[in-house]
Structures are given as structure tokens and as C-alpha cells.
Image (cartoon, rainbow, N blue to C red; front, side):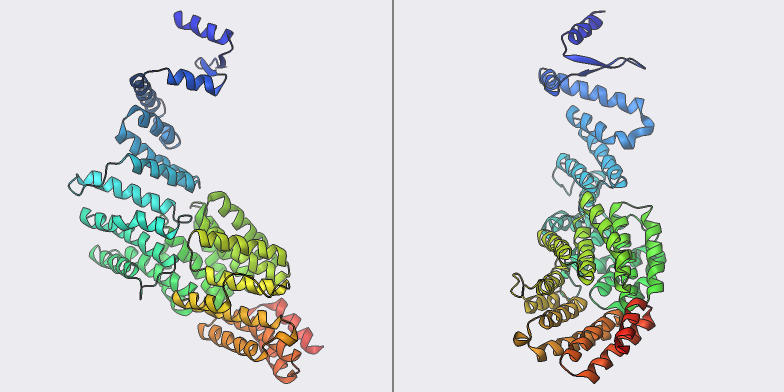
Amino acid sequence: MTTDLALDTLEARGLIRLAAAQPELEYLFRHALLQDTAYESLLKQERRSLHQVVGTALEELYPDRVGEMAAVLARHFEQAGDTDKAIDYLKQAAKFAIDRNAITEAYELYGRASALLPPYDETAPAQVRRRRIEIELGRAQAGFTFLGDEEQHQILAPLVAQSAQLGDLRLEADVHLAVALQRQLHGGRPVDDPELALSLDRVNEIGRELNDPLIAALATSIVGLYEIFSGRMLEGVARLEEVQPLLEQKRDFVGSSFALVALAIGYARLGDFDKAQESVRKSKALAEQGDVVVRVDALIGESTLHSIRGDLEAAVPLAMQCTQLAEAAGASACVVASNFVLGDAYMRQGQFAAAKIAFDRSEEIAQVTEQRVFAPSIAAYLRSLGAAMGDFDAHGHTFDQSIEEARDIGDLFGEATIVWKRAETEAKKPVAERDEAKMLADYATATASFADMGARPFVARIDREWGHELLALGRHDEGRAKLTAARDLMAELGIQREADELTAELAA
């Protein structure tokens, strides 16, 4: 009765309001400041006790809703000082957040769990050490697409020795896979990155020790992914073809989705569009069961396929969708890649202002997150785009600097692209300022490089540009020969619209 009277008095004074009468009476404070004041008026021990009671009650009332309630439960047990329960619920809440595509929220939840852990102690019980490794690994994986190189390294580096000491081979393999993927996607190569080489070797050793082909396949996929994106497409495609069925079983490793999308992009770069389309279909089917990063990866693969195939009307909306999803999820690596695809498509459509916005965003995020893989090519595209817009004194890296950066990370594809864009930029200069010999030499070098990689769509497009420049120089026979070669290769590859355009041009 006393409680009812007190509630009536508070309601009459406008301090609280009735929120629900059924199934139980529920009141809310009319202002957050009132709630804060009431909360702060409690003694610290009273607060802790109340949080413990509420947390325990929620556990009992909603045993089937632990996932969605995990963050709330974690907060109550944190405030109650029940650290073990708080950590367990923070882990569950982080996994629930990842399932809902809230990767930044998951990273923050893992971070809170990490802050509650005691410092690492190699003499602590195995269960305590395992929990720390799992939480730190979860934090690195949640932040994989937006953390900078150094931030990732600080999280992962200590886990190598800690997981080895623990003796759980599967957990150790997961740590090394995360290290290898992080090192490689930030420009590392097994030949000159000891940490990357060590992690790949250790994963292979563990695969043999456990007689588990899936573990070894994951290491192979990381190598194959690097080979495709660095221009060694034939080798990379062969590796990923071999392990693709096994990769589809490991949906909880972000590198699996990267590798499957890389296979689609590898096929597209080689001009094998039917196989690329089938790989895109498989990656999209897997993406339906994965988080937002996996879905964005699949869309990047699909938009890249359309772009290389020359279907820019399909590539642009897909790439725009990628950028929006990636920005919303905070997946910075996907923001870089999707804006790069979008910028290239806009540039080829002649939408230069839109292309600059996309490339500028891609470059900005690549610099902030230290993504060395994209940086040289983005810089080259921006210089070529500047020339198309009449700016021949664009700031930023020169073509020579970009080529050196691409060579430093072993990116043959990037190097060939930069040389191509240098030729393209030279061709846009006023005739009196143009170095024609250098321009033609760059076209020849880029064509030869792409031909060595088997990147036939790129050979065809450079031949077309090269042919136009030869015609402009009055070298008609050579120019027509290049245009004819470009037309025939495009027709063979099924890039039909561009082939038809060249047929009409040659006839005229």
C-alpha cells in the first residue's frame, strides 16, 4: 500500500508516468535527468545489488532470448561487479551483433570484454587464457575491415605466442590465419614478410598434424587471393579452384568470402566471364548466410564482373549499393574497393565529377587505414582523371612513385595499370606538350604486361586506345591493325557492344 501511495504521489507531481498496466504495472521517468538523479542517489552497494537482481531476473525470465538480451545482461552484470558473467555475455552480444551486421558494435563489445580481463598470465588456468585469446581474436576479426595496419598488429601479434602456449591447435590456426590475412591485405608478401610466411607455414603444419584438409585449404586460399589481386591470375585461379569446395564449409573465416570473390574477379580479369558469373552466383548464395561484409564482398565481385565485361549500366548501381552498405557498416576496406570500382565505371562513362568523388573517398580511406594494396592504382587513376578534366598538374604521387609502390608490394597488375594510365594521361595533353614516344612505349609495355598475365579484356581495351592514338599520329595502317585486333578480341570474349562500336568505326 505504501509503495502504491508513493507511486501515485510521484505520478501526480509529474515525475513519472504510467507506461503499461498489463501484464504488470510499468512506470517510466518523464525525464532522463530524473532517472539519473534517482540512480545516483543510491549507495554504490545498493546499485550493485539492484543490477545483480535485475540481471538474474532477466536470465530467469527470458532463457530463450539470451542472444538479443546479451548486451543488456552484460551491462547489468558489469555494474554488479560480476565480471565473469559480464565477459561471457559481452562475447555473446558481440556474436549477436555480427549476425546483425553491426560490426562496429561487435568490435566495441569485444573491447569492453577485453577491458574486464586481467592481464595475460601464462601461469593462469587454460580456460582463463583461452577466453582472453578468443576475445582478442574476435576483436581483431570484428575490426578487420576498418582497423589500420598497426592497430590490427597490436591486437594479433601477442596472440601468436599465447595460442601456441595454450596448445589448442585449431585456435592457434585461427590466430595465424587472421595474422596472414591481415599482413597480406596490407601489402605483405611471403617472400619478404617473415610474419606472413611464418603464419602460412604454421597453418599448413597444423593442417598436417590434425589431418584436416580444410585448415590447409585456408592457407592456400590466402596465397591464391594474393596471386589474383597482384596479377598472377592463372596461378591464383588454379589454387582457388582446387580449394573452393572446402572454402564453402568455412563461413566463419572472413578470408573464405574474400577468396571466393577473388576467384570471380580472377576469372573476369582473364576474360572467362561464364566462370566468373558462376563464381559470383556461388558467392552471393553464401553471402545470404553471412554478415554484411560477406554480402558487400559478393556485390563487389558482381560489380567488377559487369565493369570488366563492359556492362557499365549494371556495374554502377551495384557499386553504389556496395559503397552505401560498406559505409553504413563501417567496413572501410570494402569502402575503398567499392569506390574504386565505382570511380572506374564512372570515368569510362565520362562522368568525371562523379568519378572524382568516388576516387577521392577511396583514397581517403585507404590512407587512413593504411591499405597499401589500392593506393598506387588510386593515385594513378586520379592523375588520369585530372587530365581528362583539364588538370595536368594534379597533386599527389607521380606515376613513377606509384609504380615504385606497386613494385614494392609485388603488384604486377597495379604496375601495368599505372603504366596504362600514364600513357592515357600523356595522350590527353596538348599536342605541343605531349611526349609521343613515351606514350606509345607505355601503351606497348602495358599491353605486354597484361598479355603475360592473361588479362585479355585489358589487352583489348589498351589496343583500342593505342590504335586511336596511332591514327591521330597519321600512322593509319598500324592504327587500324590495333583497332582490328581489339575488335576481334572483344568479339571473342563476348564484349559485344564495344566490338560492334569498333566494327562500325573501322567500316567508316
